[in-house]
Amino acid sequence: MRAVDTSAWIEILVAGPVSLQLLQDVPSQADWVMPTIVQLEIWKWMRRERTRDFQRDILAFSTKCLVVPLDTPIAIEAADLCAKYKLSTADAIILATAHAMNADLLICDAHFEGLPSVVYRAKAG
Image 1 (tube, rainbow, N blue to C red):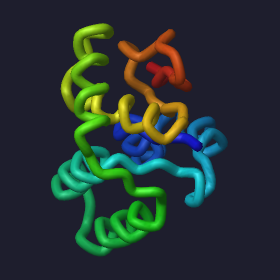
Image 2: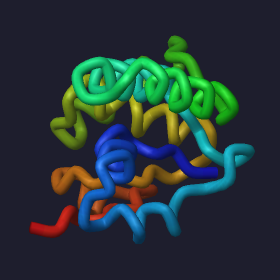
Image 3: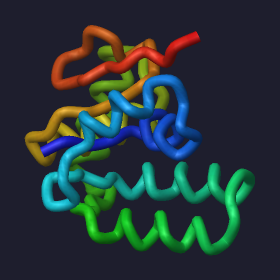
Image 4: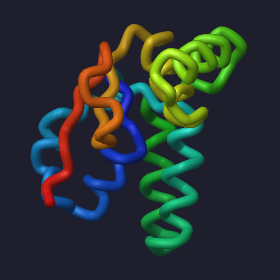
């Protein structure tokens, strides 16, 4: 099981320098954990950057993954992760969601490098 952070999604969607490596790292839809906050962040980004048809395609894809809504246990762990690693609320929710699903997290955000259960891929440049 693997959660894919918004940073990795965007890198793939813009065909960034590490997108090919990330595509090798993404799981099948059956093993792809989709925190609802990632859906929110992706949709927010796509509203600015992509057409409505593209938005619908990505939203449809994301709903076929293992969608995990924020619940109380995830919120509590996220609060602990905020304090322990000084993460933003959204980042902590994404990592806590991965933990709740016994998944790792694929991410391109440098402040996650070295954290447990994280597969970090640095953006080139």
